[in-house]
Amino acid sequence: MIELEGVPELIDPVMVAAFEGWNDAGDAASTAVAHLDREWKGEVFAALDAEDYYDFQVNRPTVFLDNGVRKITWPTTRLSVVRVGGDKPRDLVLVRGIEPSMRWRSFCNEILAFAHELGVEMVVILGALLGDTPHTRPVPVSGVTSDPDLARTMDLEETRYEGPTGIVGILQEACTHAGVPAVSLWAAVPHYVSQPPNPKATLALLNRLEDLIGLRIPLGELPEDARAWQVGVDQLAAEDSEVAEYVQTLEEARDTAELPEASGEAIAREFERYLRRREPGTGPGGPGVAMEGGDTPFLRDTGSGRTRPPKPEQPGPEAVPGAEAAEGTGEAEEPDVSEAPEESDAPEAPEGSADGSPGSDTAPDRGTGTDADADADADGETERDTDGESDK
Image 1 (cartoon, rainbow, N blue to C red):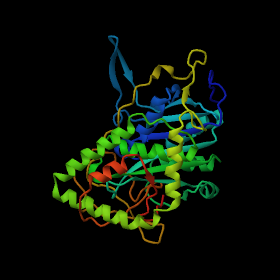
Image 2: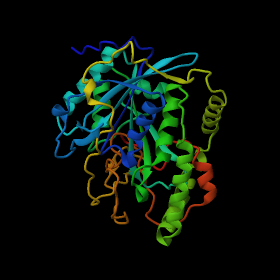
Image 3: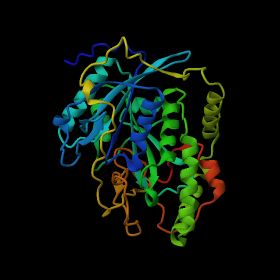
Image 4: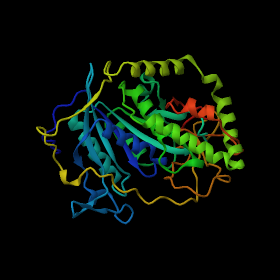
């Protein structure tokens, strides 16, 4: 039995989770949850026992000095609560950690036990994968669920993916079996610029989350960081003719595929977001207010601190997962990595967009992007990837 002493009754709580590792290309997903925690000044109220779920030779603890005293931060998963103010305040339960090394079923059960005790109404899990997508276009973000009713009511894709999966897929299925509505949001990160950070992908995930749960999320410096990131990648691509040609090929394939999708629905979604940001402090997503820590003492492993846990060791560059979805089917195919770059610092993404991430069937030809695209794109527009049917 989990006892959450000192945590007040939550208002319409939604759990938002992200895990570093295989499901977090460019650190886009974990950075998004860290942004929410920082902007709304979340208070950690629980941490899972690191001994139960992590191999410390894979995810090593770190030693640091605190006023001359040596302390250790253990790799683990922590939960915090933030209250978002406004006309209709609500609470978010933020789950941020590292993909566990072992006992995944127990790990998910413990997360779900917290969700049950806190009265969580829906779980949203963020993920990111490497894909054949140009950095000069809006980041594709797919929303998937295993719940047919949720897919219909929230305009999401119902996952039909078969293949290797990560903790995002396991947690989503655990939620489904437990009767907890769960959604996964996946951002596609260009495989040719996969090293973290990727503020543009982080911004796209937050914009999609904002649309999903109906809250106005303070973005801080993320839009400017996204513009600077894209300008930097433009400059790097311009210095390599092969990369420039490849980017241009991706742009042409993306534009051709998405031209029929430039619908009124996408325009209306962006206009609604614009209106929300024109009136800060109004509507369901007003300013966020952190829960007061003085008279609500959050318990359970309070000594574990707030320090970001170390990243897991990165997989080697043997495979760069792009994902090709079979045209007209829901079966993932093995990606072609013959043209993939050998150097990659980002975590591997699921093959064939595991756990419900979008696939791509673009040819490995090459081309260049434009500065005009950089200005148009960095506002964090999110689009559903239409290069192939997503099979999560």
